[in-house]
Image (tube, rainbow, N blue to C red; front, side):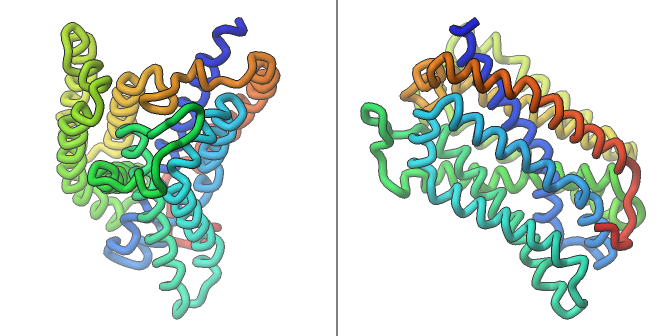
Length: 334
């Protein structure tokens, strides 16, 4: 049991990060799209559609970061040192998003624009910073001994800037499909039209990342482009291709639920490809998750608490989505 604890904790952290990307992704996507909505009533609908969920969605970010600190303190120390600036920028952007939720519904018409811009630019920069963090992790972290040995701006590269833009597009797609599911009328029609444009950019960035990533590190090239790995992993890109076709058909058939669920599936497939590429490194491509793990006694103590906390978090998340199911209106509800 003890020897499998690092693997169990690694799985829990990956699960928490994925749920954060998925759940907070669509409400960040709403913020990115916010100023482009056709009417102010549409913007009110957009914010109302995520008002009951946004703060609960960010729970998973805390769980992922806290779990990394508790179960893999060495990895946390190295990654936090390497990515300190984009992490701080991301947190500041998320603060502005939170302020916008609290103040926009109570602001006068004259001051509402301030909080509209806070919501939009907070969402935009949060997504961009998360994409930069992802790109920096994929390209690798400089480590000497047990410490980060790179510079303060190692994360700032052409590849990380590209993944930052890709994350903006991905979250926008989640946001658009969420609006198709949760709104009607002008807002839904606008979201349905916008979704196809965003899908084209989504496919473009997926292709760029797929072609660029293997050349960042030989480990990635060997994992994805050598035989027989290329055969074993071929179901992932094939499944993505099927999802793209089904997605376009669902939009043309005016489906409300399928575009959102297909977007979730596409994110799942991309996330699975990322995990396969980075395995077994928790600090790419220097320290494996087994070497970065805390003492077995510490992990055993922590997992006894996680057994009780995770069902509670999953339960109230599912319950909140059930309670606030259905379409939203533009009337104040927050």
